[in-house]
Length: 390
Ligand SMILES: [Mn+2]
Image (cartoon, rainbow, N blue to C red; front, side, top):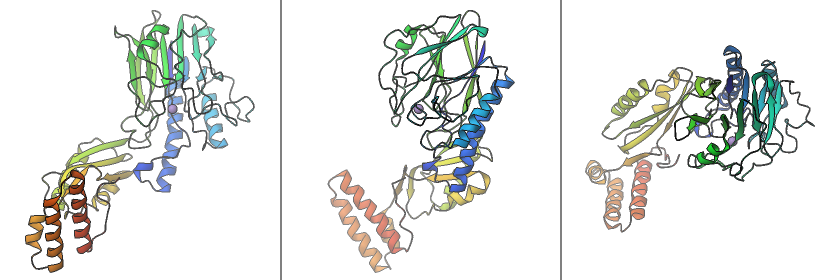
């Protein structure tokens, strides 16, 4: 039995906050998300999958348009006659007005089954000897541990568990803890395979003997700084002995590529540019990708890095430079020598040096360094860019 699993598409979600995208680029990224859904569906056709599993967050309830729901429904209809099973997540949960509800005007095709109960229920697919046990989040999501007790199921040759939940010990700090479970709790359920949504990176869960118990496919299209790299759908196979093998195929239309550049040692804008160019060239990003350049290390504050973005912007869909992790070093002693002729500058620096020497705490020292940085920039008539905020 072969299946395709994808989730966390978040159709019509607000894209790319921290990437500083223009509205035009945000619209392109929203279209990318829809195309990733189409690619995942096409994958099920190309691989002749018997079954499609969607463990939640297919769209964002608050912002999804009726037109996008029609688009999704059409894509899923194109998969017929193969069954498509959806376990709603916390972002596409069954709230009043949900397009998943039978009362909705949304026209879900016959081959689609949406789990609507807040307790686990089984659907049996006799043609492929498979039962799928799923659950739906309602409102903001189920927070109880639903896997501590044995989940009742209709037994078949292959038993699949489908849900949107948080694996203990792997939850990113900014994600909601919905339907939490441990590997041990999952193992004791004895399902052949668990298709899980919620986390946005691919990861496979194995038991103590190395057997695959379940997996997150991750999201289908990266939208922010925390969704970097290839975004995939899973093509899985389950043999007659219940052995599971997984393959991942990229369905994201555009990657977000993280590029970390340590600027320590660069003494001029030219040497900064050289370091950045070297890292960018080796990061493997393609023309259609977004690169997030993360500057680290320590750099003299009189090296202006404001033009880095524009140096690379024509080579990629979008370039974002962050200096939040860069320490801007200001050597007051050297600057004082350099500014001996400029009396206000020299007086300011002398005073700042005094304050620096008499600082009694780390916080005080940081404040003096900030004041020196801003003061010097102001005296030099340069823009007052925040030095340590993103
Ligand atoms: Mn989620």
